[in-house]
Image (cartoon, rainbow, N blue to C red; front, top):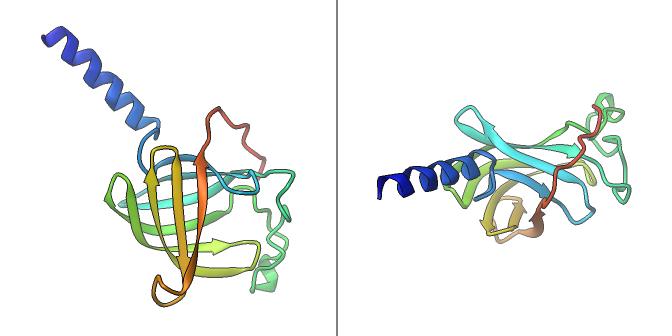
Length: 144
């Protein structure tokens, strides 16, 4: 019994370390760009690691700060200060939308290979949800 338990436990830990379960991991947004959701200190953050050719822009042209409008979206942190309330849910963070230049309060909930990302102003009722899918293969990172 011990021999079976140890390898199974190791596989579960390895899968969790790669971020294959819960909100942590590598995700594709609707345009096909790839975002990594990862631990940053005690919190959870999200950054763009690959840009799709279908993405509206490769620079942060809609940023409200004119000095930042030429920075690349590649490597851009678009989520910060999320708190994990369980492996499948994080909340209380901020989401930056480079398409609009707006920052929203947010939450994220995973269900298998689907991530529901909710951005809102004030209360969650006043917002929208975007569905991302878990990246199924290694992604070549963009160059920041």
